[in-house]
Length: 305
Image (cartoon, rainbow, N blue to C red; front, side, top):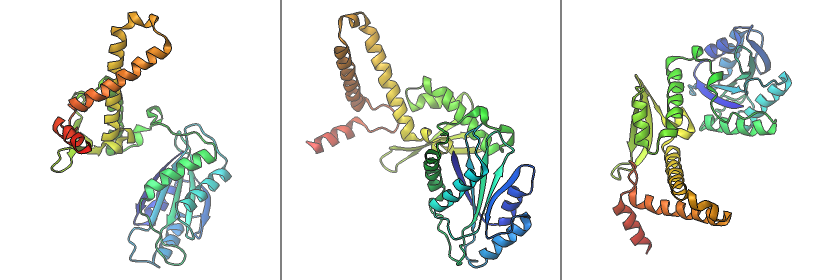
Protein backbone atom coordinates (compact mmCIF):
# COMPACT_ATOMS: atom_id res chain seq x y z
CA UNK A 1 0.00 0.00 0.00
CA UNK A 2 1.38 3.40 -0.99
CA UNK A 3 0.20 6.97 -0.40
CA UNK A 4 0.24 10.02 -2.66
CA UNK A 5 -0.98 13.44 -1.47
CA UNK A 6 -1.80 16.73 -3.17
CA UNK A 7 -3.18 19.99 -1.76
CA UNK A 8 -5.52 21.96 -4.03
CA UNK A 9 -7.60 25.14 -4.18
CA UNK A 10 -11.08 24.12 -5.38
CA UNK A 11 -13.31 21.24 -4.33
CA UNK A 12 -15.46 21.23 -7.46
CA UNK A 13 -12.79 19.84 -9.80
CA UNK A 14 -11.70 17.20 -7.27
CA UNK A 15 -15.29 16.04 -6.56
CA UNK A 16 -16.06 15.93 -10.27
CA UNK A 17 -12.98 13.84 -11.11
CA UNK A 18 -13.48 11.42 -8.22
CA UNK A 19 -17.25 10.90 -8.29
CA UNK A 20 -18.75 11.83 -11.68
CA UNK A 21 -18.08 8.49 -13.42
CA UNK A 22 -20.29 6.13 -11.44
CA UNK A 23 -19.04 3.10 -13.43
CA UNK A 24 -15.63 3.36 -11.78
CA UNK A 25 -16.41 5.25 -8.54
CA UNK A 26 -17.97 3.64 -5.46
CA UNK A 27 -18.52 5.89 -2.45
CA UNK A 28 -17.50 4.06 0.73
CA UNK A 29 -17.84 6.73 3.39
CA UNK A 30 -18.65 10.43 3.86
CA UNK A 31 -18.67 12.82 6.80
CA UNK A 32 -20.44 16.19 6.83
CA UNK A 33 -21.40 16.27 3.13
CA UNK A 34 -24.20 15.03 0.89
CA UNK A 35 -23.07 11.86 -0.87
CA UNK A 36 -25.35 11.50 -3.90
CA UNK A 37 -24.18 14.31 -6.23
CA UNK A 38 -20.64 15.63 -6.78
CA UNK A 39 -21.90 19.22 -7.26
CA UNK A 40 -23.65 19.17 -3.88
CA UNK A 41 -20.55 17.62 -2.30
CA UNK A 42 -18.43 20.50 -3.61
CA UNK A 43 -20.95 23.03 -2.29
CA UNK A 44 -20.82 21.48 1.18
CA UNK A 45 -17.02 21.46 1.20
CA UNK A 46 -16.83 25.08 -0.01
CA UNK A 47 -19.39 26.26 2.56
CA UNK A 48 -17.11 25.09 5.35
CA UNK A 49 -14.07 26.48 3.57
CA UNK A 50 -15.70 29.95 3.77
CA UNK A 51 -15.26 29.81 7.55
CA UNK A 52 -11.54 30.39 6.90
CA UNK A 53 -11.37 32.33 3.56
CA UNK A 54 -7.71 33.32 4.10
CA UNK A 55 -6.68 29.67 3.64
CA UNK A 56 -6.33 29.50 -0.15
CA UNK A 57 -5.50 25.78 -0.34
CA UNK A 58 -7.99 23.78 1.71
CA UNK A 59 -8.41 20.69 -0.49
CA UNK A 60 -6.65 17.58 0.80
CA UNK A 61 -6.60 14.84 -1.86
CA UNK A 62 -4.98 11.58 -0.81
CA UNK A 63 -4.68 8.46 -2.95
CA UNK A 64 -4.05 5.08 -1.32
CA UNK A 65 -3.02 2.40 -3.82
CA UNK A 66 -3.03 -1.29 -2.95
CA UNK A 67 -0.77 -3.95 -4.42
CA UNK A 68 -2.00 -5.24 -7.84
CA UNK A 69 -4.31 -8.21 -7.38
CA UNK A 70 -4.95 -7.49 -3.70
CA UNK A 71 -8.63 -7.76 -2.70
CA UNK A 72 -10.17 -6.08 0.35
CA UNK A 73 -13.70 -5.71 1.66
CA UNK A 74 -15.24 -2.25 1.44
CA UNK A 75 -15.53 -2.10 5.24
CA UNK A 76 -11.79 -2.76 5.61
CA UNK A 77 -10.87 -0.09 3.07
CA UNK A 78 -13.16 2.45 4.78
CA UNK A 79 -11.52 1.64 8.14
CA UNK A 80 -8.03 2.04 6.63
CA UNK A 81 -9.00 5.41 5.12
CA UNK A 82 -10.42 6.71 8.41
CA UNK A 83 -7.38 5.58 10.38
CA UNK A 84 -5.11 7.11 7.72
CA UNK A 85 -6.82 10.51 8.19
CA UNK A 86 -6.68 10.27 11.98
CA UNK A 87 -2.97 9.44 12.04
CA UNK A 88 -2.21 12.23 9.58
CA UNK A 89 -4.10 14.49 12.04
CA UNK A 90 -6.95 15.43 9.70
CA UNK A 91 -9.76 15.19 12.27
CA UNK A 92 -13.01 16.95 13.16
CA UNK A 93 -13.64 17.87 9.53
CA UNK A 94 -15.54 16.84 6.38
CA UNK A 95 -14.21 13.98 4.29
CA UNK A 96 -15.07 11.67 1.42
CA UNK A 97 -13.73 8.15 0.71
CA UNK A 98 -14.23 6.70 -2.79
CA UNK A 99 -13.05 3.39 -4.28
CA UNK A 100 -12.01 3.37 -7.95
CA UNK A 101 -12.16 0.12 -9.90
CA UNK A 102 -10.89 1.27 -13.32
CA UNK A 103 -7.22 0.27 -12.88
CA UNK A 104 -5.27 -2.96 -12.55
CA UNK A 105 -4.72 -2.11 -8.90
CA UNK A 106 -7.37 -1.22 -6.33
CA UNK A 107 -7.11 2.34 -5.01
CA UNK A 108 -8.93 4.84 -2.83
CA UNK A 109 -9.42 8.59 -3.23
CA UNK A 110 -9.72 10.47 0.04
CA UNK A 111 -10.94 14.06 -0.08
CA UNK A 112 -10.92 16.15 3.10
CA UNK A 113 -11.41 19.76 4.13
CA UNK A 114 -8.37 21.43 5.69
CA UNK A 115 -10.77 23.85 7.41
CA UNK A 116 -12.22 21.92 10.33
CA UNK A 117 -15.74 22.05 11.75
CA UNK A 118 -14.73 24.91 14.08
CA UNK A 119 -13.33 27.02 11.26
CA UNK A 120 -9.71 26.32 12.24
CA UNK A 121 -7.05 25.53 9.65
CA UNK A 122 -5.51 22.03 9.70
CA UNK A 123 -1.73 22.12 9.27
CA UNK A 124 -0.40 20.48 6.10
CA UNK A 125 3.36 20.71 6.72
CA UNK A 126 5.20 17.59 5.51
CA UNK A 127 1.82 16.00 4.92
CA UNK A 128 2.93 14.04 1.87
CA UNK A 129 5.89 12.53 3.71
CA UNK A 130 3.74 11.76 6.76
CA UNK A 131 1.16 10.10 4.51
CA UNK A 132 3.78 7.72 3.09
CA UNK A 133 5.01 6.75 6.56
CA UNK A 134 1.47 6.13 7.80
CA UNK A 135 0.67 4.03 4.73
CA UNK A 136 3.69 1.84 5.52
CA UNK A 137 2.50 1.36 9.11
CA UNK A 138 -1.05 0.51 8.03
CA UNK A 139 0.30 -1.95 5.46
CA UNK A 140 1.97 -3.89 8.26
CA UNK A 141 -0.97 -3.54 10.65
CA UNK A 142 -3.50 -4.93 8.16
CA UNK A 143 -0.99 -7.52 6.82
CA UNK A 144 -1.10 -6.21 3.26
CA UNK A 145 1.51 -6.66 0.54
CA UNK A 146 4.29 -4.10 0.57
CA UNK A 147 5.23 -2.15 -2.55
CA UNK A 148 9.00 -2.65 -2.33
CA UNK A 149 9.83 -1.37 -5.83
CA UNK A 150 8.19 0.06 -8.91
CA UNK A 151 6.52 -2.63 -11.02
CA UNK A 152 6.70 -1.25 -14.55
CA UNK A 153 4.59 -4.08 -15.95
CA UNK A 154 1.68 -2.79 -13.85
CA UNK A 155 2.04 0.82 -14.98
CA UNK A 156 -0.57 2.16 -17.38
CA UNK A 157 1.71 4.40 -19.47
CA UNK A 158 -1.12 5.48 -21.78
CA UNK A 159 -2.90 7.10 -18.84
CA UNK A 160 0.19 9.12 -17.82
CA UNK A 161 0.96 12.60 -19.09
CA UNK A 162 4.31 13.35 -20.73
CA UNK A 163 5.93 14.57 -17.52
CA UNK A 164 4.97 11.46 -15.53
CA UNK A 165 5.78 9.04 -18.38
CA UNK A 166 9.31 10.46 -18.68
CA UNK A 167 9.93 9.62 -15.02
CA UNK A 168 9.44 5.94 -15.80
CA UNK A 169 11.64 6.19 -18.90
CA UNK A 170 14.49 7.57 -16.75
CA UNK A 171 13.81 5.05 -13.97
CA UNK A 172 14.13 2.12 -16.36
CA UNK A 173 17.23 3.57 -18.07
CA UNK A 174 19.04 4.01 -14.72
CA UNK A 175 18.00 0.55 -13.57
CA UNK A 176 19.47 -1.03 -16.73
CA UNK A 177 22.70 1.01 -16.55
CA UNK A 178 23.62 0.62 -12.86
CA UNK A 179 25.00 -2.97 -12.96
CA UNK A 180 27.67 -1.78 -15.42
CA UNK A 181 28.68 1.37 -13.49
CA UNK A 182 31.35 1.88 -10.84
CA UNK A 183 31.26 5.68 -10.77
CA UNK A 184 28.66 8.38 -11.30
CA UNK A 185 30.47 9.40 -14.51
CA UNK A 186 29.92 5.89 -15.89
CA UNK A 187 26.20 6.32 -15.32
CA UNK A 188 26.28 9.75 -16.94
CA UNK A 189 27.91 8.35 -20.10
CA UNK A 190 25.46 5.46 -20.40
CA UNK A 191 22.40 7.69 -19.92
CA UNK A 192 23.69 10.17 -22.50
CA UNK A 193 23.44 7.42 -25.13
CA UNK A 194 19.69 7.37 -24.38
CA UNK A 195 19.49 11.18 -24.62
CA UNK A 196 19.17 11.59 -20.85
CA UNK A 197 21.36 14.36 -19.42
CA UNK A 198 22.85 14.16 -15.91
CA UNK A 199 23.08 17.40 -13.91
CA UNK A 200 24.93 18.01 -10.64
CA UNK A 201 24.47 20.36 -7.70
CA UNK A 202 27.47 21.35 -5.58
CA UNK A 203 27.84 22.92 -2.16
CA UNK A 204 29.09 26.48 -2.42
CA UNK A 205 32.86 27.00 -2.02
CA UNK A 206 33.56 23.38 -1.03
CA UNK A 207 32.76 22.07 -4.52
CA UNK A 208 31.29 18.98 -2.85
CA UNK A 209 28.63 17.07 -4.75
CA UNK A 210 25.30 17.66 -3.04
CA UNK A 211 22.60 16.55 -5.49
CA UNK A 212 21.90 14.93 -8.83
CA UNK A 213 19.17 15.49 -11.44
CA UNK A 214 18.25 13.92 -14.75
CA UNK A 215 16.92 15.77 -17.79
CA UNK A 216 15.09 14.37 -20.78
CA UNK A 217 13.77 16.82 -23.38
CA UNK A 218 12.33 19.83 -21.54
CA UNK A 219 11.72 17.91 -18.30
CA UNK A 220 14.12 17.77 -15.37
CA UNK A 221 13.78 15.59 -12.24
CA UNK A 222 15.75 15.21 -9.03
CA UNK A 223 17.21 11.74 -8.57
CA UNK A 224 15.14 11.23 -5.41
CA UNK A 225 11.96 12.19 -7.33
CA UNK A 226 12.60 9.36 -9.79
CA UNK A 227 13.14 6.95 -6.88
CA UNK A 228 14.57 7.33 -3.39
CA UNK A 229 17.42 4.95 -4.21
CA UNK A 230 18.57 7.34 -6.97
CA UNK A 231 19.48 10.21 -4.64
CA UNK A 232 23.17 11.15 -4.85
CA UNK A 233 23.94 9.61 -1.43
CA UNK A 234 22.31 6.29 -2.29
CA UNK A 235 23.92 6.19 -5.74
CA UNK A 236 27.37 6.82 -4.25
CA UNK A 237 26.82 4.02 -1.73
CA UNK A 238 25.83 1.72 -4.60
CA UNK A 239 28.94 2.61 -6.64
CA UNK A 240 31.16 2.15 -3.59
CA UNK A 241 29.76 -1.34 -3.00
CA UNK A 242 30.20 -2.13 -6.71
CA UNK A 243 33.90 -1.27 -6.48
CA UNK A 244 34.30 -3.32 -3.30
CA UNK A 245 32.72 -6.34 -4.99
CA UNK A 246 34.94 -5.86 -8.04
CA UNK A 247 38.11 -5.76 -5.95
CA UNK A 248 37.14 -8.81 -3.92
CA UNK A 249 36.28 -10.71 -7.08
CA UNK A 250 39.67 -9.89 -8.64
CA UNK A 251 41.50 -10.87 -5.46
CA UNK A 252 39.70 -14.19 -5.15
CA UNK A 253 40.19 -14.92 -8.85
CA UNK A 254 43.93 -14.25 -8.61
CA UNK A 255 44.37 -16.61 -5.65
CA UNK A 256 41.61 -19.10 -6.46
CA UNK A 257 44.12 -21.95 -6.73
CA UNK A 258 44.99 -21.48 -3.03
CA UNK A 259 41.41 -21.48 -1.69
CA UNK A 260 41.07 -25.30 -1.40
CA UNK A 261 44.04 -25.24 0.99
CA UNK A 262 42.37 -22.69 3.32
CA UNK A 263 39.74 -23.14 6.00
CA UNK A 264 36.46 -21.19 5.95
CA UNK A 265 37.66 -18.95 8.80
CA UNK A 266 40.88 -18.14 6.89
CA UNK A 267 38.92 -17.24 3.75
CA UNK A 268 36.58 -14.99 5.78
CA UNK A 269 39.57 -13.28 7.40
CA UNK A 270 41.16 -12.65 3.99
CA UNK A 271 37.91 -11.21 2.63
CA UNK A 272 37.56 -8.88 5.61
CA UNK A 273 41.14 -7.70 5.23
CA UNK A 274 40.64 -7.11 1.49
CA UNK A 275 37.67 -4.90 2.29
CA UNK A 276 39.71 -2.97 4.89
CA UNK A 277 42.49 -2.46 2.36
CA UNK A 278 40.00 -1.22 -0.20
CA UNK A 279 38.55 1.28 2.28
CA UNK A 280 42.04 2.66 2.91
CA UNK A 281 42.79 2.96 -0.81
CA UNK A 282 39.50 4.78 -1.36
CA UNK A 283 40.45 7.42 1.22
CA UNK A 284 43.62 8.14 -0.74
CA UNK A 285 42.18 7.82 -4.23
CA UNK A 286 38.82 9.61 -3.88
CA UNK A 287 38.67 10.10 -7.64
CA UNK A 288 34.90 10.12 -7.96
CA UNK A 289 33.44 13.54 -8.71
CA UNK A 290 32.41 15.41 -5.57
CA UNK A 291 34.54 13.45 -3.12
CA UNK A 292 37.11 15.06 -0.80
CA UNK A 293 40.62 15.72 -2.05
CA UNK A 294 43.73 14.02 -0.62
CA UNK A 295 44.66 17.32 0.99
CA UNK A 296 41.33 17.53 2.86
CA UNK A 297 41.69 13.95 4.13
CA UNK A 298 45.25 14.60 5.40
CA UNK A 299 44.12 17.87 7.00
CA UNK A 300 41.32 16.10 8.91
CA UNK A 301 43.62 13.31 10.08
CA UNK A 302 46.09 15.94 11.40
CA UNK A 303 43.26 17.62 13.35
CA UNK A 304 42.30 14.27 14.90
CA UNK A 305 45.92 13.59 15.90
